[in-house]
Length: 68
Image (tube, one colour):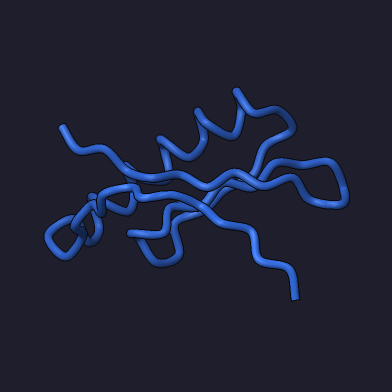
């Protein structure tokens, strides 16, 4: 079993967008956090089926918001 970091953001339209930094192009959206989490699990499974050998999970360190 592998674990992946998932980033969830809320768009201006109110939808949640989830992405997986370790897997290029792996993202989805949903109306609720629960829905987006269910969908990102499905998206990860699809990505692993197509390119699983080239994906290595990273260790989460933290997130920092920077204002410029």
